Length: 170
Image: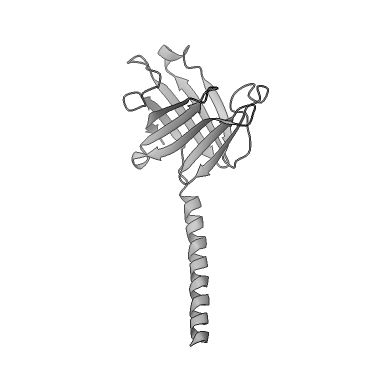
């Protein structure tokens, strides 16, 4: 009886390991593709976000080719002086990278990693203390991109905000 129980246990553990490996692979496959063109949805965005004129448009274009993601932010002519055209390449494998010009010179560092179906950016100040955390996630069956952030100022005060972008094209 003990021998049968041992065989059944080993068989079950072997199957569980195979299923577990399959689930790990499935989770990796399910990382969302952020690629596409997105337009800012002011109405559904968070309370502290910048308000824009009714005819103003802010766009994000994302090209995802893991482990890198290239994000280009632009706007229509009405906002071109307020929202400059910018392109950043980020790495999703946890390595440190420059998120903005002179970031390293100022003593800041940034990482971005997958946490489930979200990308999470963390920016650390000169003292290696977390100063900003931003989460990117696809919502509404892939029709929306939510960017939610938490910033911590030098006095330790937290500011939470979120931006919603609607998908314009894949």
